[in-house]
Length: 265
Ligand code: SF4
Ligand code: SF4
Picture 1 (cartoon, rainbow, N blue to C red):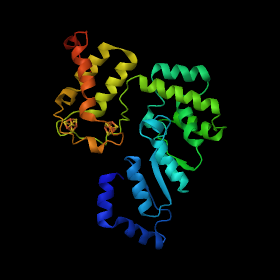
Picture 2 (picture 1 turned 135 degrees about the vertical axis):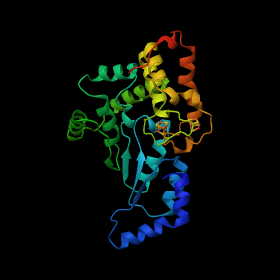
Picture 3 (picture 1 turned 90 degrees about the vertical axis):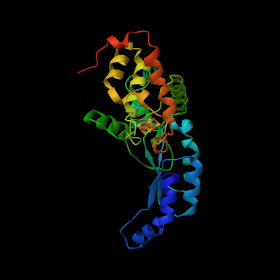
């Protein structure tokens, strides 16, 4: 739910309809998944009775999207919190080099994803953590984390504060590649445009930037006509039309002869 879907749901009387289903035993626990700013969450939560609320929560968004405020609001009202994006679509598993090094320095045996899961698992009031996993190795890592002693110590919070600052200083665009913004009417491949830019920041590999950019074909960021149709759909609240200027800028001003680089087959 966001401000637009909430307005629609309210107009259609969705909550009353769901309450009816709950009274019939068809719904056992009534809650909602939320993608907007804390003030909207507060207003909608107060308006009805909820058994849980699902929010995006991780150690980066604690400050970046003020997830702290939403979390604290729910906990103060004894509303169980379901956490989505604990590893921020994988971004906190594949950290910028300086942030990754800092974690390895603290404990070389613990994965970056494990630190992210431990952060949300340590918060009181968290009922469930939804973690997307792509392979058995990630599943094993998550299970080992949650079956172990996952509670963070005070020093760990300081460490993750440091990692957060290093992440923010890296200049990465906070896109999780969820594709909610797609399709773009002008054909821009928004998630891949941001992904290649973030990879370039990490690797400084100009040849790869050129090749990946060329491979986007008609989906290149310069096709953006700044209609902003994509922006309300982005759960990360990225000002997409503005941020697309970054990969465009790097491509145009790179010192390598991009026109001589062949896209991958
Ligand atoms: S602002 Fe740009 S990227 Fe977004 S929908 Fe419009 S043309 Fe596509
Ligand atoms: S720009 Fe936003 S909506 Fe689009 S893929 Fe990235 S995070 Fe998802």
